Image (cartoon, rainbow, N blue to C red; front, side, top):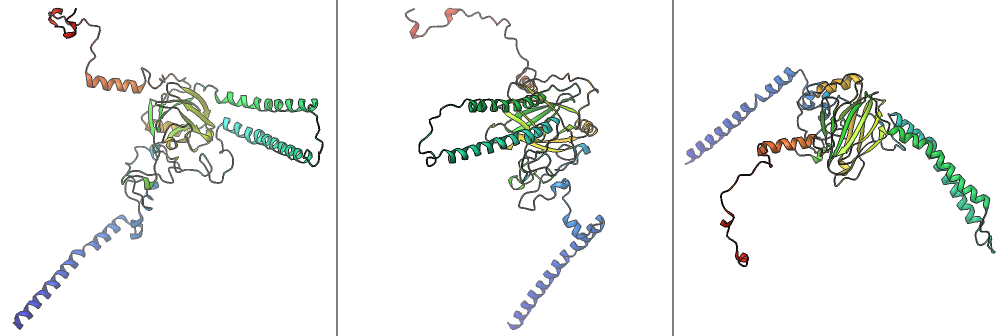
Length: 405
């Protein structure tokens, strides 16, 4: 019995040693494989460990480090003109075209109307408001002290003063006239018709995103939705990065406009009233269903500019951002070609038909009609002669209620 027990223990020990040796042999090839991979790429292990996942844009490589999920791998853009958010690669510039913490006043303006309005606000309205407020405050303090009960045990019974009444009537009139003259001129400049060489951009408001059309450039169409934060997207979905823009302002597709070229902006909506507003352009134009509104402006400085819907339009009104890239005319032409469009002839006036949403020749109505035709087949003319029947009218027996007839 003793010999049998010793043999059993020896057999168990040998099996255990054999198992450990097999596990070590199985793990051994892993290190050479890793070494081979590092040597092939020519990068150090630390560099290989921190490299961005293949297929992600450089700006996306920081996703997933704060509890969020990695964005969906984007395919390599067909053209550099579509490198970032469907537009040329451009990052946000501090204090330009976006809200800035601690900034007091109006955003820096990049259009002539915006510069004019900024000057009017800072040089006319703000000083005038300050002077009037201080003057009224001084009058109130004077009245409280001068006409208090302790200083006037017997109140004055004066009811009229012709000089004072003339002054307080004429002074406000002169102030309003001084404000009205530059205000009317600025308002007129904002709605000045665009020249013949203007680039037409049609902005269409939807609940709750913007869609765009370039009718003079081959009918390019773009849909722009807000990019969510990394902790708000599902695994595999794209999230906002710092390169895309500020929170609640970045979009998955940017629109591109040329610098130094007049822009003809047309707005409308498919459902409720929206408002296309970009503060740096001094633009806020309502988008109304069944109506086309128009204005024009010229961007004078390249950059990335943000705005948002400025008309209460429903539950997700706060999530309708606008992102505009202002580039040189050459870059704009390259972007149009990359989008499959074409540049119009130089100096040629716009001749594109811009139907309102819901019109008979609008894209949505024509698409719905085509889909309905594909499902129902050819339409039968309702005015054709109906087939005749040989059944007489007396063949339809009356009900109980017809017995008395």
